[in-house]
Image 1 (tube, helix red, strand yellow):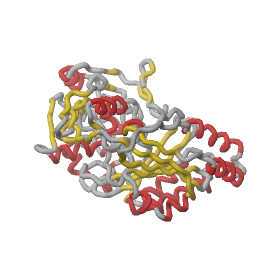
Image 2 (image 1 turned 45 degrees about the horizontal axis):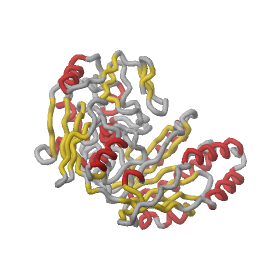
Image 3 (image 1 turned 90 degrees about the vertical axis):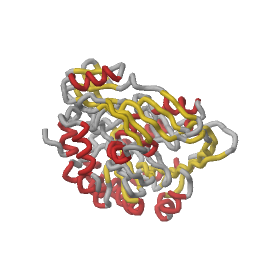
Image 4 (image 1 turned 135 degrees about the vertical axis):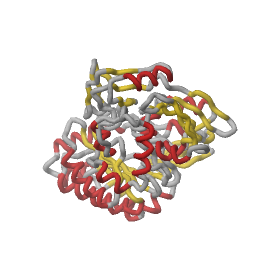
Length: 428
């Protein structure tokens, strides 16, 4: 978000004071801005990344004017959309023309281009991240030249730039493969975390979409399942996630030195938690409001490492970090072929940990990161981590190929900030 001459991300953990904030209205204006604006140029969506991807003392460039549904094909179920379109708005536009995203993350406030560039995802062992829907993309490179790439004619370039971090150029429009509108049967219930972890593979593959939250100091998991259904729509219950977080914070504050009582009270409250069971159109199921601000770290692990790693994270949290009250989110994602995708060539278990945005997350996050890395984890590009090119190049098999494409697209490093240089190993 912009505040006067400055910018900060949603959580308030990243700030910047660029020389210029630019919002071009046309592709020609965008090309000119890339050629002439003070560098480095970083592209901004809605600021929902927790890493300094947008941070720049040069130019922060918005693609808000490159938004909306450009065209759609009712036979192929493909749609051409501007990447500045917010995901929630995109869902409504597609629904209105009979198309649907196959999956969504749990927040829909991001710009779609930001979701693509950071490999944002939902949950489902047979469902890929947003970038797996790409069939074509328009990119303005570091020289201001406009390119059109497609899966059919330039598959390697599509795979190189499918998760681009805004480092290859400005992605202005994409063609995505959708599906027909559908309804989902969503259920949510509470059960012991031991049950879920003991049957992890079975439970996380039993539904089209499976995910769960572990509530710290409770011994309980909040499990969510979704399957496509032909049943008639019912009413989605009111959301109470934010009020639940307020309660968990109060219990943390009051009972910090009495973990046994904290566990008893949280467990007792969860035991009375009502089962949620409803049917709704897809776009009214996946997402939730997130008004309590936090910082987040998420690592993507080989699927078979999920249960064991989560056990270690829970032990770490409950032994050493009693100030943490935000739930741990666990999801699964299908393998894909995008070179900088954390899901490249492997089915994945994603574990996300959170901490209050007004409190220092680093002691907890750094301790957890050691566990994630030991399990072969790859960090989410938009969420806190401490890896640089030295480590990342070893866990991405096509790293060198991706960096070669990046250099071709941006030979003068117009999109390379100090953070991007450190992240990708670029000499400035």
